[in-house]
Structures are given as C-alpha cells and as structure tokens.
Image 1 (tube, one colour):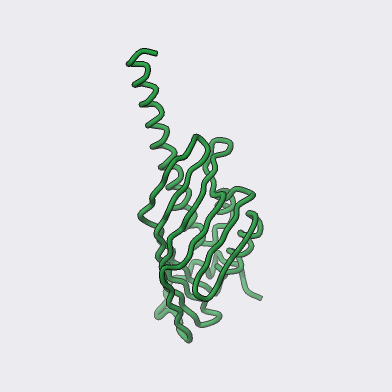
Image 2 (cartoon, rainbow, N blue to C red):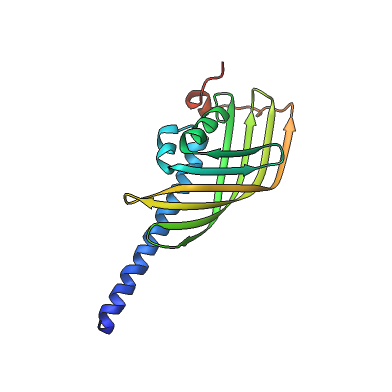
Length: 173
C-alpha cells in the first residue's frame, strides 16, 4: 500500500471514529431527554434488548436485566406525579472497535416524587457500554454509584407552572 493510500485509510478510520463517538453521545443525550419526558417509545430504541442496568443510590439500588424490565421500571418511576431533570455531561467516550464503545458520563439530577412529597438531588458517574448493531448504537450496559445524594422529605416543587410528566408519565392508580 502506498503512503497516500495508507494516509487515506487512516483518515477514513479517524473520521469513522469521530462519527461513532458523536453517535454514542447522541444516544446518551437522547436517553436523558426521554427519561425526563417519559418518551418510552424512543427510549426503547436506545437500549439493546439484553441491556443490563445497575444503579446504586443512597436510598435505592436497581439491578435490572433486559430492555422490557428496564422500561417498566422507568415507566413506574417517571410517572404523572413526578418531575425529573437529568443532566449528563463531560462525556468520556472510547470507541473500542467498529461495534463496541464505552463511556463515562457525569450526572446531575433532581427528582421530585410529588406523590411521596420527596425530592432527591445528587450526582453520579455513569459507566456505560454500547453496542452497534444494524448500523446503530445502543446501550448494552449502564451503571452508576452516587457521588452524593440528598433526599428531602415533605417537600413539593414550589410554584410548578409546567409539568410535562403530568401529561406523558404513567398515571398512578
């Protein structure tokens, strides 16, 4: 292979890594948006059917296997009596191969469960694994352990003038 052909092959590879990195970033950004808006149809497309989830907070621990189990847990948690704000930032994404990637995301979230009059505020580091199947990236593993978590009780959002999950979230019995 000539030097020019090698350089072009390397350039093509580097561009693909950049495209894949951006695609993985978009998957996780969409994840945060879909969780906070209870967009279950789009959220389903972001997860591999065999996804494994392990989230550990100060007051909870979720260990879930499979997309259906995870989506059911999200639908039950982000219901019509909840308000959520999840910001994922400072991504550190590494493309391991044409079909595998890993990422670390810094999470800051605030979650009100108005039914229980409880607010949770905290941060965590997500550790995710991604798999590219049929040309699209999906989350195959996702975990975090809280850096800190503050839970306040007997508290409701003050002056709540918009409540999207009230419309899009699962209705409580």
